[in-house]
Image 1 (cartoon, rainbow, N blue to C red):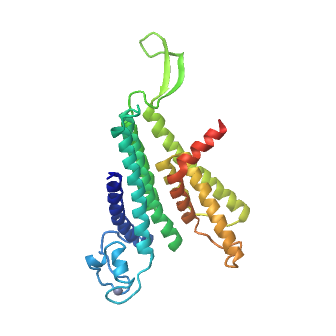
Image 2 (cartoon, rainbow, N blue to C red):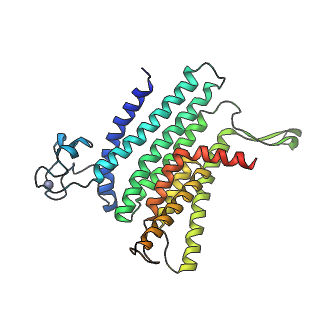
Image 3 (cartoon, helix red, strand yellow):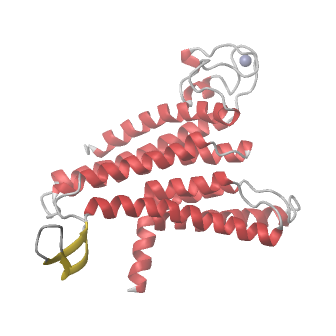
Length: 315
Ligand SMILES: [Zn+2]
């Protein structure tokens, strides 16, 4: 039997637990509630939820979507978020398995194992991003809010992870040669000498990712500003800007632009659909953050392939 299925099963199980925790965040963070206390309780009758009624997906099905104490219906959002998070973790666990196989168990190639930590860390970054984006997607849809506790935490995690990636770079790996053997270097008390000038791998990696976050935020701020100048009303909040910066911090600049493209496309299609059904006019508000989050999930999953194909095309 393939070991892949073991990784996937573990990913699914861990994903269910994270999905369950994500539901608590979704219910409480937009109201600025604590995610630790009080423990899980029914919002209607306040009765604490027994552990066997708190199992991801299973309990919702067994209870037939009703509180055991007061019969209040439990929204289908709960099992859906749990299942979505579990599926996301399953996909990433499968990718983790592929990375391990490729670098450590497959003798048919010559990729140095020193590249493995980098691949594992970006795998982890995508897993974290999915958790945050699923939460943000639902929160914006239900409350119109994108809590800083998700977006800013995501940006910070992106920075930490890219620094970790920098630490594991091999000697001279990823460095950029600025000028070769042409620049004259002098320092106090020595004679002049010519040499190469480099940006080291970690500098290029970390600096590049910081610029990616800032660049993505500036682009969305510019779009927001133009929209306001033309339409004389607010098109999107700063939460959307922070979320795009978070996507750039965890994935990189081009994937974040792809997310923006997917998100804007999906929001437009949905807007046209609403107008066609007579359910919205030119001034209706759309939860753009939800579409941007969905775009981010898609870009995290297929972004590499699209960006590769596109750069092949330009070559
Ligand atoms: Zn109840």
